Length: 153
Length: 153
Image 1 (cartoon, rainbow over the protein chains, first blue to last red):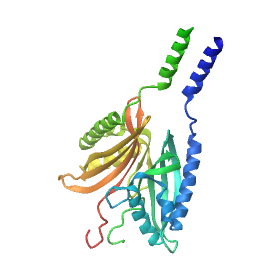
Image 2 (cartoon, each protein chain N blue to C red; image 1 turned 45 degrees about the vertical axis):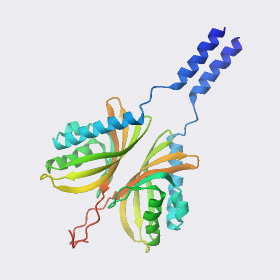
Image 3 (cartoon, rainbow over the protein chains, first blue to last red; image 1 turned 180 degrees about the vertical axis):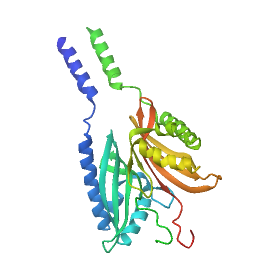
């Protein structure tokens, strides 16, 4: 009988520990790898590889447009950049992870076809862990450069 | 003996259920209440009531500036709006909640001192549940209006 009690107590301890959680360091490394893939897909103009890095229900919040939804919006916004020969360099500033959600703050440089810096900005992305890896569920960014006045632009 | 086994099995079921989780509907209602408080603190120019709605380690990502950190940054950015008689109307579009983190997408209208609409935009905020309620930990926004060209501005 003692054996049954022991087994049940062991099951309680194991059962309650739940699935193994990734550490924040692990999640940050996974997200930095995903960002490297994002950057190369954009640079190589591989729109399908790029689009599946977002969840089906993703929301994009680019400056100067309404809230956009889904992978079709991803294809439209970033396909336009690909056509213009624009790519982006991402630099993760910090990652917070809770369960299957991660929140990333980062900086971005927008690079033109002649390797000229078109914009320098920042972003907030929320990631969702799926069966096929971490995917972007919310993505918003803006410029960090001062507003140019008509005289300067 | 059967009794011991029964008690242990019951403990397993209860023990594994963990602390009671708020439903997403509850969290959304709490965040909408917090937003109502945010709007009124901004309109009433109550800077201290306003600043404590952000976590100590908050990051603000306003357009046309670098990433800003902490409540001192909150006081500077929103204190400037208060001085200019500007207030903001928020409208929550959706809330996702995982543990003590919530992700909110919303729309915002920036209102001038003569009740004129200065800007119409959107935001992504990540909230953290603390001992004193939900607080904003990451806050980024941008305009949804088209870019004005020098000729139009």
